[in-house]
Amino acid sequence: MGFSITFLGTGAATPTLRRGLSATVANVDEKLCLFDCGEATQIQMKRFKVKALHIQHIFISHLHGDHFFGLVGLLFTYHIGKRKNELHVYGPPLLEEILRIQMGISVKELNYPLVFHPLSSQNLEMVCEEDNFTVSAFPLQHRLPAYGFLLKEKERPRKVLHQFIEDYHPHYTDIVRIKSGEDYVLPDGRILSNEEITFPDPPISFAYCFDTAFYAPIAEVLKNVDLLYHEATFMHDKAELAAEKGHTTTIQAATIAKKALAKRLMLGHISSRYRNLDSFLNEARNIFSETYLAEDGMTITLRK
Image 1 (cartoon, rainbow, N blue to C red):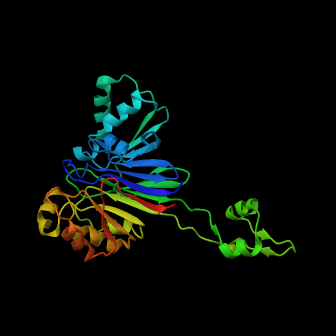
Image 2: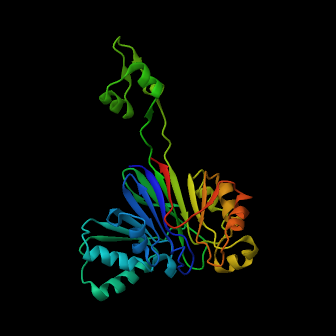
Image 3: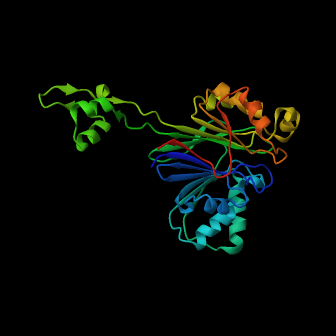
């Protein structure tokens, strides 16, 4: 149980020995979502011990190869493996046709249900709902249609105050009822209201913004996000090149995080031209101090 993010591939355009291509797993109470699926994502899953069969939703941001060329291989592995449970894939409408053609060459019918969800909204739109979280898509600014994703937990049960437990030693079944919203009745008949003996457990949010040019309006969509994972392909001296290619610089990503009041910013989609990343990171930290570099295999635990 818990909420964690694992970065499988943090590089841009072509893989290197240090950085694979875009792929990130969100694990919310053992329900897994995969964001992008670059080449060799399957290998990265094995390398970093991600339970591939637990993935229920795959979100493809756009149709540049470094973000989806690993998808067909993963789907085929599921087919020849043990997968039987339903898999949902979300992406630009053309992706459905691409999958139909590529899979159709070698597979007549998959051994598991595959449900495709085309993305086309020009505004923030919820595209996935589980009992404990939602995922919404929103448009980005790239050289072809691209979408960011915002994963948000639903409201969580309130937590029981430790002081209450120490003072009254409630039975486990009482604690369960309190977490479900009930008041607590003392032996003498007095009632302690639920709000007196609990405190809120704020839901956690994670945003994935790949690939995009600097686009200030998304800061409002990302308001107060707990973890923002934003592409930063270039340092800011390459701002013109970044704009031309539909990418973001370190300073621009940090500016979005600052405007959004994000709690933490992770930078990814890092160009292989950069060897020493100290200057890369410091450039962003001058704007937003809670900035960090994503590395392949890194896991961030947002809730235990």
